[in-house]
Length: 600
Image 1: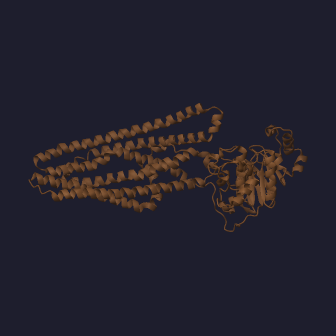
Image 2: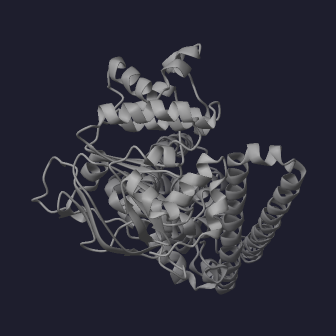
Image 3: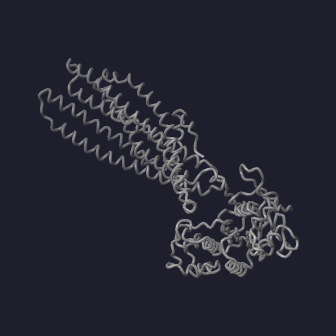
Protein backbone atom coordinates (compact mmCIF):
# COMPACT_ATOMS: atom_id res chain seq x y z
CA UNK A 1 0.00 0.00 0.00
CA UNK A 2 1.42 3.36 -0.99
CA UNK A 3 0.35 6.73 0.40
CA UNK A 4 -2.49 8.33 -1.45
CA UNK A 5 -1.52 10.78 -4.15
CA UNK A 6 -4.00 13.24 -2.69
CA UNK A 7 -1.84 13.45 0.42
CA UNK A 8 0.80 15.32 -1.63
CA UNK A 9 -1.66 18.22 -2.03
CA UNK A 10 -1.46 19.04 1.69
CA UNK A 11 -0.03 22.44 2.65
CA UNK A 12 3.73 22.93 3.18
CA UNK A 13 3.27 22.02 6.85
CA UNK A 14 2.71 18.41 5.74
CA UNK A 15 6.06 18.42 3.97
CA UNK A 16 7.76 19.88 7.03
CA UNK A 17 6.05 17.30 9.25
CA UNK A 18 7.33 14.48 7.02
CA UNK A 19 10.87 15.83 7.11
CA UNK A 20 10.67 16.59 10.84
CA UNK A 21 10.31 12.87 11.49
CA UNK A 22 13.90 12.43 10.35
CA UNK A 23 15.15 14.28 13.44
CA UNK A 24 15.57 11.04 15.40
CA UNK A 25 18.02 9.82 12.78
CA UNK A 26 19.79 13.16 12.32
CA UNK A 27 19.95 13.86 16.07
CA UNK A 28 22.86 11.51 16.88
CA UNK A 29 24.94 13.22 14.17
CA UNK A 30 23.82 16.80 14.75
CA UNK A 31 27.29 17.88 15.94
CA UNK A 32 28.73 17.32 12.45
CA UNK A 33 25.75 19.10 10.93
CA UNK A 34 26.13 22.10 13.25
CA UNK A 35 29.82 22.31 12.43
CA UNK A 36 29.04 22.26 8.72
CA UNK A 37 26.33 24.91 9.04
CA UNK A 38 28.63 27.18 11.08
CA UNK A 39 31.45 26.71 8.59
CA UNK A 40 29.18 27.72 5.71
CA UNK A 41 28.35 30.92 7.61
CA UNK A 42 32.05 31.70 7.96
CA UNK A 43 32.54 30.94 4.26
CA UNK A 44 29.86 33.46 3.32
CA UNK A 45 31.73 36.12 5.31
CA UNK A 46 34.93 35.35 3.44
CA UNK A 47 32.92 35.48 0.19
CA UNK A 48 31.54 38.90 1.22
CA UNK A 49 35.08 40.22 1.65
CA UNK A 50 35.68 39.88 -2.09
CA UNK A 51 33.08 42.52 -3.15
CA UNK A 52 34.08 44.77 -0.24
CA UNK A 53 37.77 44.70 -1.14
CA UNK A 54 36.91 44.98 -4.85
CA UNK A 55 35.00 48.19 -4.06
CA UNK A 56 38.07 49.50 -2.21
CA UNK A 57 40.26 48.78 -5.23
CA UNK A 58 37.87 50.45 -7.72
CA UNK A 59 37.30 53.49 -5.52
CA UNK A 60 41.05 53.94 -5.03
CA UNK A 61 41.68 53.73 -8.77
CA UNK A 62 38.84 56.19 -9.40
CA UNK A 63 40.61 58.59 -7.04
CA UNK A 64 43.98 58.01 -8.77
CA UNK A 65 45.39 55.92 -5.92
CA UNK A 66 46.95 52.71 -7.23
CA UNK A 67 48.18 51.35 -3.89
CA UNK A 68 46.21 48.10 -4.29
CA UNK A 69 48.57 45.55 -2.75
CA UNK A 70 46.71 45.12 0.53
CA UNK A 71 43.16 44.81 -0.89
CA UNK A 72 44.38 42.48 -3.66
CA UNK A 73 46.17 40.25 -1.14
CA UNK A 74 43.03 40.40 0.97
CA UNK A 75 40.94 39.19 -1.99
CA UNK A 76 43.35 36.29 -2.64
CA UNK A 77 43.35 35.36 1.06
CA UNK A 78 39.55 35.52 1.25
CA UNK A 79 39.19 33.30 -1.83
CA UNK A 80 41.64 30.71 -0.45
CA UNK A 81 40.07 30.72 3.01
CA UNK A 82 36.60 30.36 1.49
CA UNK A 83 37.83 27.35 -0.50
CA UNK A 84 39.20 25.55 2.58
CA UNK A 85 36.23 26.41 4.81
CA UNK A 86 33.67 25.33 2.17
CA UNK A 87 35.53 22.05 1.61
CA UNK A 88 35.54 21.42 5.37
CA UNK A 89 31.82 22.28 5.62
CA UNK A 90 30.82 20.08 2.69
CA UNK A 91 32.80 17.17 4.13
CA UNK A 92 31.01 17.40 7.48
CA UNK A 93 27.52 17.74 6.01
CA UNK A 94 28.01 14.90 3.51
CA UNK A 95 29.44 12.66 6.22
CA UNK A 96 26.28 13.29 8.23
CA UNK A 97 24.20 12.41 5.16
CA UNK A 98 26.07 9.13 4.77
CA UNK A 99 25.63 8.22 8.44
CA UNK A 100 21.92 9.09 8.42
CA UNK A 101 21.30 6.98 5.30
CA UNK A 102 23.22 4.11 6.94
CA UNK A 103 21.06 4.33 10.06
CA UNK A 104 17.88 4.54 7.97
CA UNK A 105 18.78 1.39 6.05
CA UNK A 106 19.60 -0.46 9.28
CA UNK A 107 16.34 0.64 10.92
CA UNK A 108 14.31 -0.20 7.81
CA UNK A 109 15.79 -3.69 7.56
CA UNK A 110 15.29 -4.24 11.30
CA UNK A 111 11.64 -3.17 11.01
CA UNK A 112 11.03 -5.59 8.14
CA UNK A 113 12.45 -8.46 10.21
CA UNK A 114 9.74 -7.84 12.81
CA UNK A 115 6.84 -7.94 10.37
CA UNK A 116 4.74 -10.95 9.49
CA UNK A 117 2.39 -12.36 6.89
CA UNK A 118 -0.19 -9.56 7.16
CA UNK A 119 2.43 -6.89 6.42
CA UNK A 120 3.89 -8.67 3.40
CA UNK A 121 0.42 -9.37 2.05
CA UNK A 122 -0.17 -5.61 2.07
CA UNK A 123 3.26 -4.41 0.86
CA UNK A 124 5.05 -5.97 -2.09
CA UNK A 125 8.73 -6.95 -1.97
CA UNK A 126 9.48 -4.69 -4.93
CA UNK A 127 7.92 -1.72 -3.13
CA UNK A 128 10.02 -2.43 -0.03
CA UNK A 129 13.17 -2.61 -2.15
CA UNK A 130 12.35 0.76 -3.73
CA UNK A 131 11.85 2.33 -0.31
CA UNK A 132 15.05 0.78 1.04
CA UNK A 133 17.17 1.95 -1.89
CA UNK A 134 15.62 4.84 -3.84
CA UNK A 135 13.77 6.60 -1.01
CA UNK A 136 16.72 6.50 1.38
CA UNK A 137 18.98 7.74 -1.42
CA UNK A 138 16.67 10.75 -1.86
CA UNK A 139 17.00 11.60 1.83
CA UNK A 140 20.77 11.21 1.66
CA UNK A 141 20.80 13.52 -1.35
CA UNK A 142 18.65 16.06 0.47
CA UNK A 143 21.06 16.23 3.42
CA UNK A 144 24.25 16.19 1.37
CA UNK A 145 23.07 18.57 -1.37
CA UNK A 146 19.72 20.14 -0.50
CA UNK A 147 20.83 21.17 2.99
CA UNK A 148 23.97 22.78 1.57
CA UNK A 149 21.99 24.69 -1.05
CA UNK A 150 19.43 25.83 1.52
CA UNK A 151 22.14 26.96 3.92
CA UNK A 152 23.86 28.87 1.12
CA UNK A 153 20.56 30.49 0.16
CA UNK A 154 19.85 31.61 3.73
CA UNK A 155 23.36 32.83 4.50
CA UNK A 156 23.74 34.50 1.12
CA UNK A 157 20.44 36.33 1.61
CA UNK A 158 21.29 37.50 5.13
CA UNK A 159 24.88 38.51 4.36
CA UNK A 160 24.06 39.89 0.93
CA UNK A 161 21.13 42.02 2.05
CA UNK A 162 23.12 43.24 5.04
CA UNK A 163 25.92 44.60 2.88
CA UNK A 164 23.44 45.89 0.25
CA UNK A 165 21.70 47.94 2.94
CA UNK A 166 25.10 49.27 4.01
CA UNK A 167 26.00 50.41 0.49
CA UNK A 168 22.58 51.69 -0.68
CA UNK A 169 19.41 51.30 1.41
CA UNK A 170 17.15 52.82 -1.28
CA UNK A 171 18.50 50.57 -4.00
CA UNK A 172 17.98 47.59 -1.72
CA UNK A 173 14.33 48.51 -1.15
CA UNK A 174 13.72 48.32 -4.91
CA UNK A 175 14.33 44.55 -4.73
CA UNK A 176 11.59 43.92 -2.17
CA UNK A 177 8.43 44.25 -4.38
CA UNK A 178 9.16 41.11 -6.47
CA UNK A 179 9.69 38.99 -3.33
CA UNK A 180 5.96 38.17 -2.71
CA UNK A 181 5.72 37.04 -6.33
CA UNK A 182 8.75 34.78 -5.88
CA UNK A 183 7.25 33.34 -2.67
CA UNK A 184 3.82 32.72 -4.24
CA UNK A 185 5.31 31.01 -7.27
CA UNK A 186 7.59 28.89 -5.09
CA UNK A 187 4.60 27.74 -3.00
CA UNK A 188 2.60 26.85 -6.12
CA UNK A 189 5.55 24.98 -7.61
CA UNK A 190 6.16 23.10 -4.36
CA UNK A 191 2.58 21.81 -4.40
CA UNK A 192 2.83 20.69 -8.03
CA UNK A 193 6.23 19.10 -7.38
CA UNK A 194 4.83 17.24 -4.37
CA UNK A 195 2.13 15.58 -6.49
CA UNK A 196 4.62 14.71 -9.23
CA UNK A 197 7.19 13.35 -6.75
CA UNK A 198 4.60 11.14 -5.06
CA UNK A 199 3.56 9.66 -8.40
CA UNK A 200 7.18 9.11 -9.47
CA UNK A 201 7.98 7.15 -6.29
CA UNK A 202 4.80 5.07 -6.60
CA UNK A 203 5.50 4.18 -10.22
CA UNK A 204 9.12 3.38 -9.34
CA UNK A 205 7.80 0.95 -6.72
CA UNK A 206 5.62 -0.62 -9.41
CA UNK A 207 8.71 -1.19 -11.57
CA UNK A 208 10.51 -2.79 -8.61
CA UNK A 209 7.55 -5.05 -7.85
CA UNK A 210 7.11 -6.08 -11.49
CA UNK A 211 10.81 -6.84 -11.91
CA UNK A 212 11.05 -8.81 -8.67
CA UNK A 213 7.98 -10.93 -9.45
CA UNK A 214 9.12 -11.54 -13.02
CA UNK A 215 12.60 -12.72 -12.03
CA UNK A 216 11.25 -14.89 -9.20
CA UNK A 217 8.91 -16.63 -11.64
CA UNK A 218 11.21 -16.65 -14.67
CA UNK A 219 11.13 -20.43 -15.07
CA UNK A 220 7.33 -20.48 -15.07
CA UNK A 221 7.25 -17.63 -17.59
CA UNK A 222 9.66 -19.41 -19.90
CA UNK A 223 7.93 -22.77 -19.51
CA UNK A 224 4.60 -21.20 -20.52
CA UNK A 225 6.16 -19.17 -23.37
CA UNK A 226 4.99 -15.87 -21.87
CA UNK A 227 8.18 -13.86 -22.42
CA UNK A 228 6.62 -11.52 -24.98
CA UNK A 229 3.52 -10.95 -22.85
CA UNK A 230 5.71 -10.09 -19.87
CA UNK A 231 7.78 -7.71 -21.99
CA UNK A 232 4.58 -5.94 -23.07
CA UNK A 233 3.33 -5.77 -19.47
CA UNK A 234 6.63 -4.34 -18.32
CA UNK A 235 6.56 -1.81 -21.15
CA UNK A 236 3.21 -0.53 -19.84
CA UNK A 237 4.60 -0.27 -16.29
CA UNK A 238 7.74 1.42 -17.59
CA UNK A 239 5.70 3.87 -19.69
CA UNK A 240 3.60 4.83 -16.66
CA UNK A 241 6.81 5.64 -14.79
CA UNK A 242 8.16 7.61 -17.75
CA UNK A 243 4.93 9.64 -18.04
CA UNK A 244 4.95 10.79 -14.41
CA UNK A 245 8.71 11.41 -14.58
CA UNK A 246 8.14 13.63 -17.64
CA UNK A 247 5.52 15.55 -15.66
CA UNK A 248 7.93 16.03 -12.79
CA UNK A 249 10.54 17.24 -15.28
CA UNK A 250 8.04 19.70 -16.77
CA UNK A 251 7.30 21.23 -13.36
CA UNK A 252 10.99 21.37 -12.53
CA UNK A 253 11.85 22.94 -15.89
CA UNK A 254 9.19 25.61 -15.40
CA UNK A 255 10.69 26.53 -12.04
CA UNK A 256 14.15 26.52 -13.58
CA UNK A 257 12.96 29.00 -16.22
CA UNK A 258 10.96 31.41 -14.05
CA UNK A 259 13.41 31.82 -11.20
CA UNK A 260 16.28 33.11 -13.41
CA UNK A 261 13.79 35.41 -15.17
CA UNK A 262 12.81 36.97 -11.85
CA UNK A 263 16.51 37.29 -11.00
CA UNK A 264 17.13 39.04 -14.33
CA UNK A 265 14.36 41.58 -13.54
CA UNK A 266 16.14 42.36 -10.26
CA UNK A 267 19.45 42.83 -12.09
CA UNK A 268 17.89 45.19 -14.65
CA UNK A 269 16.37 47.25 -11.83
CA UNK A 270 19.79 47.59 -10.19
CA UNK A 271 21.48 48.56 -13.46
CA UNK A 272 18.87 51.23 -14.24
CA UNK A 273 18.51 52.94 -10.87
CA UNK A 274 22.00 52.22 -9.57
CA UNK A 275 23.65 53.38 -12.78
CA UNK A 276 21.75 56.64 -12.53
CA UNK A 277 23.02 57.12 -8.94
CA UNK A 278 26.60 56.61 -10.13
CA UNK A 279 26.14 59.21 -12.90
CA UNK A 280 24.68 61.67 -10.40
CA UNK A 281 27.60 61.06 -8.06
CA UNK A 282 25.47 59.89 -5.12
CA UNK A 283 26.95 56.38 -5.28
CA UNK A 284 30.63 55.59 -5.76
CA UNK A 285 31.37 53.35 -8.72
CA UNK A 286 33.23 50.89 -6.53
CA UNK A 287 30.30 50.71 -4.14
CA UNK A 288 27.96 50.16 -7.10
CA UNK A 289 30.09 47.27 -8.35
CA UNK A 290 30.17 45.79 -4.84
CA UNK A 291 26.40 46.22 -4.54
CA UNK A 292 25.89 44.45 -7.85
CA UNK A 293 28.18 41.60 -6.72
CA UNK A 294 26.12 41.24 -3.54
CA UNK A 295 22.97 41.17 -5.67
CA UNK A 296 24.47 38.22 -7.54
CA UNK A 297 25.31 36.59 -4.20
CA UNK A 298 21.64 36.87 -3.21
CA UNK A 299 20.15 36.03 -6.58
CA UNK A 300 22.41 33.08 -7.48
CA UNK A 301 20.85 30.63 -4.97
CA UNK A 302 17.37 31.62 -6.21
CA UNK A 303 18.39 30.47 -9.68
CA UNK A 304 18.42 26.92 -8.34
CA UNK A 305 15.36 27.38 -6.11
CA UNK A 306 13.42 24.98 -8.32
CA UNK A 307 16.08 22.33 -7.79
CA UNK A 308 15.97 22.92 -4.02
CA UNK A 309 12.18 22.60 -3.95
CA UNK A 310 12.44 19.43 -6.01
CA UNK A 311 14.92 17.92 -3.54
CA UNK A 312 12.83 18.78 -0.50
CA UNK A 313 9.56 17.58 -2.04
CA UNK A 314 10.98 14.24 -3.17
CA UNK A 315 12.73 13.72 0.16
CA UNK A 316 9.51 14.61 2.01
CA UNK A 317 7.62 11.99 0.03
CA UNK A 318 10.43 9.49 0.67
CA UNK A 319 10.40 10.23 4.40
CA UNK A 320 6.63 9.73 4.59
CA UNK A 321 6.94 6.40 2.75
CA UNK A 322 9.71 5.21 5.07
CA UNK A 323 7.89 6.18 8.25
CA UNK A 324 4.78 4.44 6.99
CA UNK A 325 6.87 1.31 7.59
CA UNK A 326 8.74 2.54 10.70
CA UNK A 327 5.52 3.53 12.47
CA UNK A 328 3.87 0.18 11.85
CA UNK A 329 3.95 -1.89 15.06
CA UNK A 330 5.56 -5.32 14.99
CA UNK A 331 3.00 -8.02 14.28
CA UNK A 332 4.60 -10.35 16.82
CA UNK A 333 5.49 -8.63 20.10
CA UNK A 334 8.32 -10.19 22.06
CA UNK A 335 7.25 -9.79 25.72
CA UNK A 336 8.40 -12.93 27.50
CA UNK A 337 7.86 -13.67 31.16
CA UNK A 338 11.01 -13.60 33.30
CA UNK A 339 10.08 -16.99 34.74
CA UNK A 340 10.17 -18.76 31.36
CA UNK A 341 12.40 -21.86 31.54
CA UNK A 342 15.69 -21.83 29.65
CA UNK A 343 15.19 -25.32 28.22
CA UNK A 344 12.07 -26.69 26.54
CA UNK A 345 11.20 -30.34 27.21
CA UNK A 346 8.86 -30.80 24.27
CA UNK A 347 5.23 -31.13 25.38
CA UNK A 348 2.60 -29.33 23.27
CA UNK A 349 -0.98 -28.49 24.17
CA UNK A 350 -3.53 -26.61 22.09
CA UNK A 351 -6.84 -25.55 23.62
CA UNK A 352 -9.84 -24.20 21.69
CA UNK A 353 -7.60 -22.48 19.14
CA UNK A 354 -9.28 -20.17 16.63
CA UNK A 355 -7.78 -18.06 13.88
CA UNK A 356 -9.22 -16.10 10.97
CA UNK A 357 -7.08 -14.34 8.37
CA UNK A 358 -7.82 -10.61 7.89
CA UNK A 359 -10.57 -10.22 5.31
CA UNK A 360 -11.49 -13.92 5.29
CA UNK A 361 -15.10 -14.99 5.53
CA UNK A 362 -14.50 -17.99 7.79
CA UNK A 363 -12.04 -19.29 10.37
CA UNK A 364 -8.90 -21.05 9.15
CA UNK A 365 -8.71 -22.74 12.58
CA UNK A 366 -12.02 -23.44 14.31
CA UNK A 367 -12.00 -24.44 17.99
CA UNK A 368 -9.12 -26.89 17.57
CA UNK A 369 -7.63 -28.76 20.54
CA UNK A 370 -4.87 -31.37 20.68
CA UNK A 371 -2.21 -32.70 23.03
CA UNK A 372 1.28 -33.92 22.08
CA UNK A 373 3.35 -35.53 24.81
CA UNK A 374 7.08 -34.88 25.07
CA UNK A 375 8.99 -37.34 22.89
CA UNK A 376 5.92 -38.25 20.83
CA UNK A 377 5.81 -38.30 17.03
CA UNK A 378 2.51 -36.96 15.73
CA UNK A 379 1.30 -36.72 12.13
CA UNK A 380 -1.18 -34.07 10.97
CA UNK A 381 -3.11 -34.70 7.77
CA UNK A 382 -5.82 -32.96 5.80
CA UNK A 383 -6.80 -31.43 2.48
CA UNK A 384 -5.06 -28.42 1.02
CA UNK A 385 -6.37 -25.35 2.87
CA UNK A 386 -7.59 -27.33 5.87
CA UNK A 387 -5.49 -25.22 8.29
CA UNK A 388 -2.42 -27.40 8.87
CA UNK A 389 0.23 -24.77 8.09
CA UNK A 390 -1.73 -22.09 9.93
CA UNK A 391 -1.67 -24.30 13.02
CA UNK A 392 2.09 -24.87 12.80
CA UNK A 393 2.86 -21.18 12.36
CA UNK A 394 1.05 -20.39 15.60
CA UNK A 395 3.15 -22.86 17.55
CA UNK A 396 6.32 -20.88 16.66
CA UNK A 397 4.43 -17.53 16.65
CA UNK A 398 4.92 -16.70 13.00
CA UNK A 399 1.24 -15.97 13.51
CA UNK A 400 0.31 -14.87 17.01
CA UNK A 401 -2.29 -17.22 18.52
CA UNK A 402 -5.07 -16.19 20.87
CA UNK A 403 -3.99 -15.78 24.47
CA UNK A 404 -3.73 -19.05 26.42
CA UNK A 405 -4.52 -21.26 23.45
CA UNK A 406 -1.11 -22.70 22.50
CA UNK A 407 1.14 -24.09 25.24
CA UNK A 408 4.67 -25.49 25.26
CA UNK A 409 5.53 -27.41 28.44
CA UNK A 410 2.29 -26.06 29.96
CA UNK A 411 3.33 -22.43 29.40
CA UNK A 412 1.72 -20.14 26.80
CA UNK A 413 4.06 -19.65 23.85
CA UNK A 414 3.91 -15.89 24.47
CA UNK A 415 5.83 -16.47 27.74
CA UNK A 416 8.95 -17.57 25.85
CA UNK A 417 11.41 -15.19 24.21
CA UNK A 418 10.87 -15.44 20.46
CA UNK A 419 14.50 -16.36 19.84
CA UNK A 420 14.32 -19.21 22.35
CA UNK A 421 10.96 -20.46 21.11
CA UNK A 422 12.02 -20.52 17.46
CA UNK A 423 15.39 -22.08 18.29
CA UNK A 424 14.02 -24.92 20.42
CA UNK A 425 10.85 -25.40 18.38
CA UNK A 426 12.32 -25.81 14.90
CA UNK A 427 9.97 -25.40 11.93
CA UNK A 428 10.97 -26.73 8.52
CA UNK A 429 8.46 -24.99 6.19
CA UNK A 430 6.85 -26.57 3.16
CA UNK A 431 8.49 -23.98 0.90
CA UNK A 432 12.12 -25.21 0.66
CA UNK A 433 13.75 -21.79 0.57
CA UNK A 434 17.53 -21.75 0.08
CA UNK A 435 19.91 -18.80 -0.12
CA UNK A 436 22.28 -18.11 -3.00
CA UNK A 437 25.16 -19.41 -0.89
CA UNK A 438 27.21 -22.63 -0.74
CA UNK A 439 25.27 -25.71 0.35
CA UNK A 440 27.27 -25.82 3.59
CA UNK A 441 26.17 -22.29 4.50
CA UNK A 442 22.54 -23.20 3.90
CA UNK A 443 22.65 -26.29 6.12
CA UNK A 444 24.45 -24.42 8.93
CA UNK A 445 22.50 -21.19 8.45
CA UNK A 446 21.73 -20.61 12.15
CA UNK A 447 25.24 -21.59 13.33
CA UNK A 448 28.01 -21.54 10.69
CA UNK A 449 30.56 -22.76 13.28
CA UNK A 450 29.18 -26.32 13.30
CA UNK A 451 31.67 -29.08 12.63
CA UNK A 452 31.88 -30.98 9.34
CA UNK A 453 31.01 -34.15 11.23
CA UNK A 454 27.62 -32.73 12.25
CA UNK A 455 26.98 -31.35 8.76
CA UNK A 456 27.61 -34.71 7.10
CA UNK A 457 25.54 -36.49 9.76
CA UNK A 458 22.56 -34.22 9.05
CA UNK A 459 23.04 -34.63 5.30
CA UNK A 460 23.14 -38.41 5.70
CA UNK A 461 19.94 -38.44 7.75
CA UNK A 462 18.24 -36.31 5.07
CA UNK A 463 19.51 -38.73 2.38
CA UNK A 464 21.53 -35.90 0.84
CA UNK A 465 25.06 -37.25 1.30
CA UNK A 466 25.23 -39.07 -2.05
CA UNK A 467 23.90 -36.00 -3.88
CA UNK A 468 26.50 -33.74 -2.25
CA UNK A 469 29.29 -36.19 -3.03
CA UNK A 470 28.37 -36.06 -6.72
CA UNK A 471 28.87 -32.28 -6.84
CA UNK A 472 32.40 -31.21 -7.92
CA UNK A 473 32.67 -28.78 -4.97
CA UNK A 474 30.58 -30.91 -2.61
CA UNK A 475 29.55 -28.80 0.41
CA UNK A 476 31.06 -25.68 -1.17
CA UNK A 477 28.75 -25.93 -4.18
CA UNK A 478 26.96 -22.66 -4.93
CA UNK A 479 23.30 -23.48 -5.41
CA UNK A 480 22.02 -20.27 -7.01
CA UNK A 481 19.20 -17.98 -5.90
CA UNK A 482 16.43 -19.91 -4.10
CA UNK A 483 18.36 -23.13 -4.82
CA UNK A 484 17.65 -22.88 -8.55
CA UNK A 485 20.40 -25.40 -9.44
CA UNK A 486 18.80 -28.14 -7.30
CA UNK A 487 15.78 -30.29 -8.04
CA UNK A 488 12.65 -30.03 -5.93
CA UNK A 489 13.54 -33.15 -3.95
CA UNK A 490 17.12 -31.99 -3.37
CA UNK A 491 15.89 -28.64 -2.07
CA UNK A 492 13.49 -30.34 0.33
CA UNK A 493 16.23 -32.62 1.64
CA UNK A 494 18.61 -29.66 2.05
CA UNK A 495 16.07 -27.75 4.15
CA UNK A 496 15.35 -30.94 6.10
CA UNK A 497 19.08 -31.28 6.85
CA UNK A 498 19.03 -27.66 8.02
CA UNK A 499 16.25 -28.58 10.46
CA UNK A 500 17.76 -31.86 11.66
CA UNK A 501 21.18 -30.38 12.44
CA UNK A 502 19.56 -28.11 15.05
CA UNK A 503 18.56 -31.11 17.20
CA UNK A 504 15.68 -29.10 18.66
CA UNK A 505 13.45 -30.51 21.44
CA UNK A 506 10.47 -30.00 19.11
CA UNK A 507 10.82 -30.46 15.34
CA UNK A 508 7.96 -29.49 13.03
CA UNK A 509 8.11 -30.78 9.45
CA UNK A 510 5.55 -29.10 7.21
CA UNK A 511 5.05 -31.47 4.26
CA UNK A 512 8.79 -31.89 3.68
CA UNK A 513 8.56 -35.15 1.72
CA UNK A 514 6.19 -34.17 -1.10
CA UNK A 515 8.99 -34.02 -3.72
CA UNK A 516 10.93 -37.16 -2.69
CA UNK A 517 10.31 -40.73 -3.78
CA UNK A 518 9.00 -43.38 -1.40
CA UNK A 519 12.38 -45.09 -0.99
CA UNK A 520 14.02 -41.81 0.07
CA UNK A 521 11.07 -41.09 2.32
CA UNK A 522 11.45 -44.44 4.10
CA UNK A 523 15.14 -43.74 4.68
CA UNK A 524 14.42 -40.30 6.14
CA UNK A 525 11.60 -41.57 8.35
CA UNK A 526 13.88 -44.31 9.66
CA UNK A 527 16.51 -41.71 10.52
CA UNK A 528 13.90 -39.56 12.25
CA UNK A 529 12.80 -42.52 14.35
CA UNK A 530 16.42 -43.27 15.30
CA UNK A 531 17.53 -39.70 15.98
CA UNK A 532 14.40 -38.38 17.65
CA UNK A 533 13.22 -41.34 19.71
CA UNK A 534 13.05 -39.14 22.83
CA UNK A 535 12.19 -35.82 21.17
CA UNK A 536 8.91 -34.40 19.94
CA UNK A 537 8.25 -34.43 16.19
CA UNK A 538 5.25 -33.11 14.26
CA UNK A 539 4.85 -34.37 10.71
CA UNK A 540 2.49 -32.67 8.27
CA UNK A 541 1.97 -34.77 5.17
CA UNK A 542 -0.50 -35.74 2.49
CA UNK A 543 0.92 -39.28 2.35
CA UNK A 544 -0.37 -42.17 4.44
CA UNK A 545 3.05 -43.79 3.98
CA UNK A 546 4.49 -40.92 6.05
CA UNK A 547 1.75 -40.70 8.68
CA UNK A 548 1.60 -44.44 9.48
CA UNK A 549 4.96 -44.22 11.31
CA UNK A 550 3.60 -41.69 13.83
CA UNK A 551 2.52 -42.50 17.38
CA UNK A 552 -0.71 -40.63 16.73
CA UNK A 553 -2.41 -39.09 13.68
CA UNK A 554 -4.71 -36.07 13.60
CA UNK A 555 -6.87 -35.47 10.53
CA UNK A 556 -7.94 -31.83 10.07
CA UNK A 557 -10.69 -30.50 7.83
CA UNK A 558 -11.87 -26.86 7.66
CA UNK A 559 -9.81 -26.02 10.75
CA UNK A 560 -11.29 -28.80 12.89
CA UNK A 561 -10.00 -32.20 13.97
CA UNK A 562 -12.28 -34.78 12.40
CA UNK A 563 -10.27 -37.92 13.24
CA UNK A 564 -7.44 -38.90 15.57
CA UNK A 565 -5.76 -42.14 16.54
CA UNK A 566 -3.10 -44.59 15.43
CA UNK A 567 -2.81 -45.82 11.84
CA UNK A 568 -4.65 -49.06 12.48
CA UNK A 569 -7.43 -47.33 14.45
CA UNK A 570 -8.09 -44.79 11.69
CA UNK A 571 -8.22 -47.53 9.04
CA UNK A 572 -10.80 -49.30 11.11
CA UNK A 573 -12.90 -46.12 11.39
CA UNK A 574 -13.49 -46.11 7.60
CA UNK A 575 -13.38 -42.30 7.45
CA UNK A 576 -11.32 -39.75 5.53
CA UNK A 577 -8.01 -41.37 6.47
CA UNK A 578 -9.11 -44.84 5.41
CA UNK A 579 -10.41 -43.54 2.09
CA UNK A 580 -7.17 -41.62 1.53
CA UNK A 581 -5.16 -44.78 2.22
CA UNK A 582 -7.26 -46.75 -0.27
CA UNK A 583 -6.87 -44.14 -3.02
CA UNK A 584 -3.11 -43.87 -2.52
CA UNK A 585 -2.68 -47.65 -2.33
CA UNK A 586 -4.54 -48.01 -5.63
CA UNK A 587 -2.44 -45.31 -7.26
CA UNK A 588 -5.08 -42.56 -7.29
CA UNK A 589 -4.58 -38.86 -6.61
CA UNK A 590 -5.33 -37.17 -3.35
CA UNK A 591 -7.23 -34.47 -5.17
CA UNK A 592 -9.89 -37.03 -5.98
CA UNK A 593 -10.85 -36.88 -2.31
CA UNK A 594 -12.21 -33.36 -2.67
CA UNK A 595 -15.55 -34.97 -3.29
CA UNK A 596 -15.47 -36.28 0.27
CA UNK A 597 -16.83 -34.05 2.99
CA UNK A 598 -16.32 -36.02 6.15
CA UNK A 599 -17.84 -34.32 9.17
CA UNK A 600 -16.42 -34.50 12.63
